[in-house]
Image 1 (cartoon, one colour):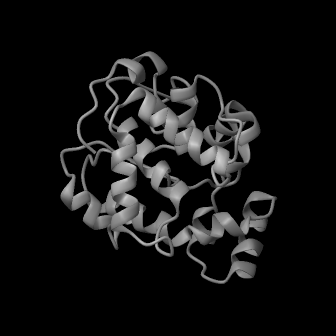
Image 2: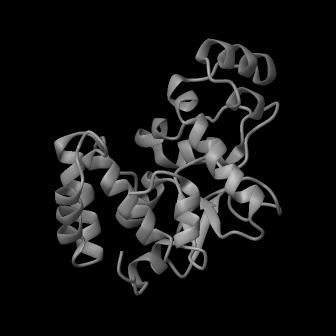
Length: 210
């Protein structure tokens, strides 16, 4: 586990990195990628948070951030989205300071969607949801169960939950896919997008060690 995102970049400068963090913040209206991801995921759509606008992400107090966000975006800011503001700023700082860094916004539920061929019906925090996601990883890529158990042994649940481990494994593996797709599909340059593996490529891709 890393304490700071800059350490992730330092150790993986040549690798494509998928992050479950918004890259680029909205101004005035919600990003199309977030709306399309929620629609694509159906029953799991609420797992995609609408991020704070840039000015709200710089405010620590939730009530103040919510007020600023509402003024600029005409809708409120969820506490879940506000809670990751520090991480959003951390990732953006690395991207601003590093030229042509291969950091891509992704989402674990989109990666599991690619593995499953449809949204996963069960919540990731439920027992059935945990088992099913673990099964998806192992079914496509033998050895994932052993890696999952190893991470459980090496970490404390107060530091990282079981579902977050599976999410990070899905992102790490998906980042190695030979072919990617995104929401929105075929966006214009500089348009915010959320990446995930193209389903056929995901099934056939020669994954390396996690």
